[in-house]
Amino acid sequence: MKKTVLITGASSGFGLMLATTLHQRGYQVIGTSRQPEKYAAAVPFTLLPLDLDDAQSVANLPALLFSKVDHLDVLVNNAGYMVTGLAEETPLALGREQFETNFWGTVAVTNALLPHFRARKQGQIVTVSSIVGLLGSPNLAFYTASKHAVQGYFKALRFELDQFNIQVSMVEPMWFKTQLGHNAVAAKKNTIHDYDTYRRKADAATRKGIAEAQAPDAVVNTIVGLIGTARPRFSNPVGKMTGMILFLQQYLPKMFESAIHKSVTEAAS
Image (cartoon, rainbow, N blue to C red):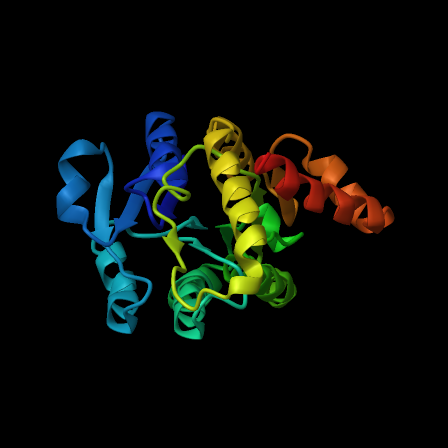
């Protein structure tokens, strides 16, 4: 029997492609969107309202979900967004908003559905993080920090849920062609003159990453594979050169740091 899958942020990007792919393969798919009425007619699966920043919206999710299905097998935490900007120049209020969505919103949705998984003594949680959650990136300090927080939370949670046969996995993509980059919120206040040259280079590197991003198929295929695996791996980096980059960070840190600096310099040339 095919599984029932809930995917947050299913009206665009990875979420939409994943939901459509799973629907086509016979899974029972429920997606969420902040504006489901805007997209419902264009997708072949059910869309429920969910705003990760709204505690009541998150609290309403289980009742809405189980009015449509009688059980849930897989939760895919996909919803989120990206704040760009140099660390010191990014207003703290904007950084807190990044955490409210990417970290606290993801945790709240997970906690809202854990009682169902625990009662059934089975379930699977797949969370879309980012390669920067394992590394770090200039011009993305608060996005990087939010993804590090997500990685750390689920790294601990997986041990606590193992007794209930609930599998926990992370997917850490490189740059891929989705709406994430185009919908990013840029920090344009608190400009500090000392950063003028570096800001120009870092902005160019970010734009280059978005422009040269890979097609999202690899990420979708990775998640589909995890859903079809009895004991999936926890960490699943996806994208060109991820293995080499992670190797350099761990075993050749000076070379890794040099490569990061070089990527910023070359993007601006």
